[in-house]
Image (tube, rainbow, N blue to C red; front, side, top):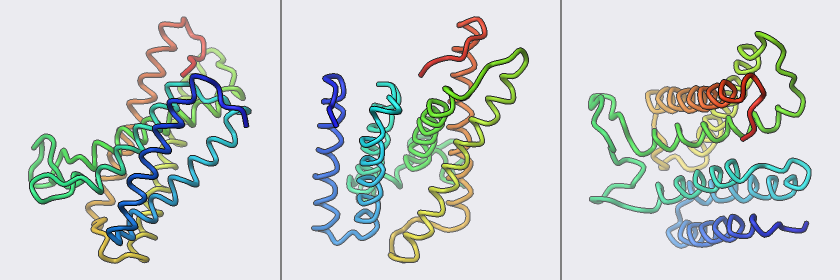
Amino acid sequence: MQVKKNEVPILIVNLGYIVVFGGLSLARLNYEFVIYTAVIVLFFSLIFAAQRKVEFSQTVLWGLTAWGFLHMIGGHVFVGGKRLYELILLPLLPEYEILKYDQFTHMFGFGVATLAAYHLLRPHLKDRPHGWRTLSALVFLMGMGLGALNEVLEFLVVLVAPASGVGGYLNTALDLSFNMLGAVLAVGWLSLRRMRGKGELPTV
């Protein structure tokens, strides 16, 4: 598939962090992130193969790139002897360890995933009067569904690599909550753009 000029930097960045952190995962026998690297490679390949037909925007492509990068450094960079994923960015609710880097990454990632879902859905939609609430609810549910799929993946990782440190029920519940928050923010951003576009379905 021919790569457009403005897609080359995205391709280079993705290949770069996949090679670097995939190699680190193998060298450190970090089976959790060996699996995650394989998933990212699969996901990246699907995006690459479908790009000429789907034509994801630069916003979506760079957002997905940033999400993958944030995920990989979260598992490989250490701060004060702890993985970046365990770092508390803002002690909003210390008893629940909120707001952790992990939770921010979930919020950001599934916000971007919701935008990607909207991009896929948009060509099949017609924004009829008073219909945006229904359409935005569909987009929100698509984002939430992707978030739930991610939690199933994390469960499979725990089964394969019990020492992965993914966490228990509370971690899963918080992940789903921040996935939801990301989806809400994405739909909110789309709604604002629609208002500024005088009711037209926004592009992303």
